[in-house]
Image (cartoon, rainbow, N blue to C red; front, side, top):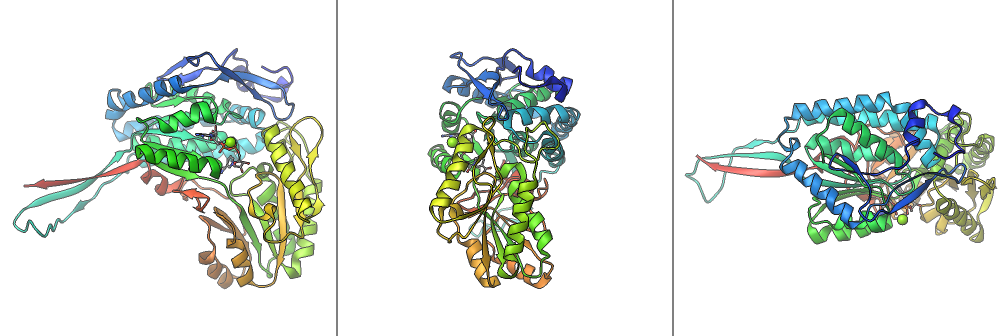
Length: 502
Ligand code: NAI
Ligand code: MG
């Protein structure tokens, strides 16, 4: 473990986990190194020092993991397990995650930069609830019976029904912003449906997926039901998507990679759901209290350093309140204490990587070049750690790149508007369609606006709330399909129709 992590700041469990000399791949219930022996470092974004090294999976490891997942379905006990037993195992796993939540949150914080307190309160709480929610579904998967009326078999008596069957082997490819949480969004419905999983965490944040694999082992899941391949997109992700024995890919990440995965999936007719980028609007109507709007807008963009697919990155405020709300958001940004994720007082934590910090700073510079006014923030903070100052940009035209493109950092663009029709059009004038929030108590206008917004989720007087029962996903370039809720479960099931002539 890196000497730069102060052990007094983390639990014994987290320290013991990080103290392991090496992290292997988890394949077929066994810990094993990459076939070619490759490893890579994972870095603490607060200190820029190496935390530890993990195995870098390649094509041979992908093949081993996918075959193990297939065997677990075809030959192992998993494929024959009663739904109630799957449910029991999932509940046991949820209990273990809950028991280890503090350590998991600390490891997530050290690996990703995010606040450990938030990781505990938000990420890990939702992981537990998501597993429990889907555990419940394991025993509630139902087909249907129909009265047949085949027109060209009038005399034939038929019994017809549908069955829901697991899709098969799932490739779950997840990003670094909510590493374990997004993994749980894939794992929950997959296990409830009776699928098996090969999970590939992002190369920036491999550690909590490995921790989860230990808990899966401890919970007593049969070998091969969950396999974890740490590694990068090109050498582990791409061969996983292409593998002919993978039946469905569930991806969360960039729109660019989502498109590659979509194209590759069609070659094998692999099912695929994609949860991609966003540029979600926060719309403040003129009846809203400006102070409340400012607090809401600041949380919507600065939570997790803006590394949130549904971050409220475009702020539209009625002209009447614009100056006040923007000034208040800037004041909130300036008052947020900066520090590492393990410091409970710090509200501005490092971004995940040097690359992400540079990408975000580059966007701020592009904003400046295209005429934006930097109301507050404006670039990197400190010279050690991947910190970016919470930034508010104003005076930007609708075609500015900072208004159209996903920045994925603590950067807000603020624009005034004059009437609701105009703001509805501007809110929709983006390639993305993930989320939107409306801030108002005018019920009539709120209800009229919700159907007009091109977004998978609309929040009112709140932003980015997630519930395991509420489907989450995007329109347009924000993706295909849904995570969470019953909608996600359906995507891990195939429907088989049976016709029986009696
Ligand atoms: P990315 O899309 O490259 O990475 C996400 C996951 O995809 C990682 O596990 C990565 O290893 C994997 N991957 C990459 N290339 C792959 C390939 N060819 N085949 C299969 N898997 C592959 O995202 P990246 O580069 O880390 O971030 C770039 C931008 O993407 C961010 O600035 C942000 O705008 C967006 N993003 C959006 C996320 C979301 O929650 N919707 C999450 C992460 C990034
Ligand atoms: Mg990438």
